[in-house]
Image (cartoon, rainbow over all chains, first blue to last red; front, side):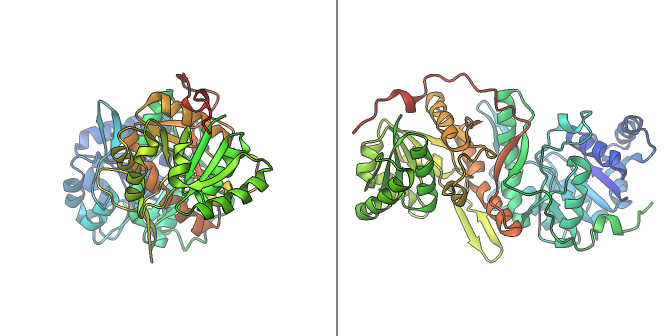
Length: 237
Length: 237
């Protein structure tokens, strides 16, 4: 069991993933800019999962006490918020599920960031942390729904550190019931993040909650894991 | 039945899709820069599908006689080749499955094209044609394989013209056994094209032939089609 902080934990994606992690037996700290909002959301979530392992805290306190930290913040304001938390995130595995998406009258689209991504930007702003990209494509509605597991979906995981990536690949199973798929280097977040625009477009058109499943992939085959970080670091206060 | 020209039809992706279209009962013209190479490849393909409905021709002749034209050319040199064919492609639906992908020692990656895509570039170069993006994610090995249908995969289709898109959504069923998925506007090709880098990365890592399947999507639901182009235009010589 790990202590997982969800920065931006009061938004729909953050709350939904927090719910899944808590259901999976992890201790979860919901972080928010407002400590009060975080505590209210954590109380609700704690009642829903029926356990006392969900707490709320201001983002910096949430980050400080965690083994693993999920960034589930809007892209707007992302860089400033991440930079602010650098001291608390030092030495930790930081998961980014941030989607730089825009909307106009023609629908959703991936923002043109140039040759970078939110995850790579976070890594540059957090030189003492290890950033992994994952959990971009799960709909907030499904995450917050009652289904036991989102077992028709895959979590694509990208990163440059094998150990950190292995921890997140393992964590994905608490959401989908199967390990995440190692999608490659962190820079492939440039492809994973804006793909969400395609899924939103499909959702609108067909009135569904779409996600990604990797076809032709044998889920019984997993990569040799080299000591998942998330389960070996002792839980901090 | 349509006449479908495959520009770049002697490459693995082009040959594979041509094979699927021919199996699906369409008349196929393989196009190549070299008429001779096209004829050789078409003869081989015709023997494989056991029908005389596969021909080979120089790219411009192939394009001229077709109802639907698939661009299956490398991104390198794409713009010049497309511009050259503008007269032959005028008035037609042009499908782009072009993937602007790079490789270096860290693996595959999507090229940074700025706020555009190969499909949008083709549309700009072909103002009198209607460009649709599709068929980016099917592995050439699977396409050229013996399986009846690639029925575990989805063909994501993007475009700005509803009628042209409907024709391609229908054509996808000759490959996967089910209609393609309307992914939205043509500009979403910016997301679909480089996603292939992620699939190649997964293939290398897990020794699989991965593709995309849209999770949470009910394949029995199809969009109201407004007179698919590919089946209503009479086959030209």
